[in-house]
Image (cartoon, rainbow, N blue to C red; front, side, top):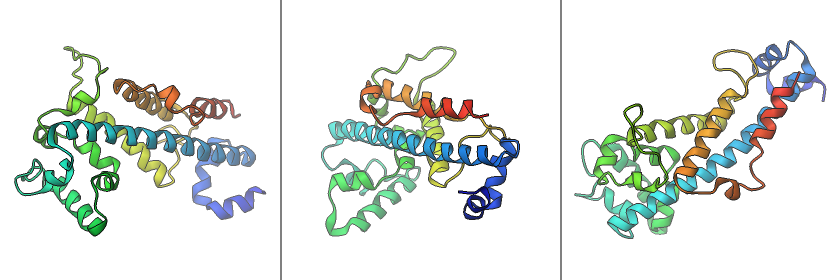
Length: 228
């Protein structure tokens, strides 16, 4: 496809950043755009696997403490999230239950919760409401030291970075540039990929075997870095 046609479809405003990063080389700009799409697809797949792994680990942990219908019960009167500080979490659960209506089941309710919901279970009010038990899903987490505390706030912030990346991809934002600059860079992606791998390992999950055949992130990053 000619660049003029490509730019007409994707918009001049969107392609301007790619052109600038590629020194106005239109062929290179189209290649970078396509590599960004491939990288976004790969990362979204990895993040999706991580999200499912995380929510299942949380579900197992709370099933062992609160029983088979823990999430619905958590939002009921006197449930663990029936407090002023957890009111938004409770409202999300209630809304999902109402939407499921007659199709309700615990597994369907779990599936209704998005990444942000699971992240916020590590926020201070929700974490303490759940008996401070969720760090048990990370059996291989390093021990805290004076230099760094691997506590619930640390996990909350790490999950926030992954959620930000997930949302960028979902909203078709580029992930191939240096932050705030029109420079081609894989630093942002590589840092977040390392973070995801780290959290998989903290959950004692062999991410290489789990993602076998799905994960070509480093390969695509290398292609992007070599693009000149």
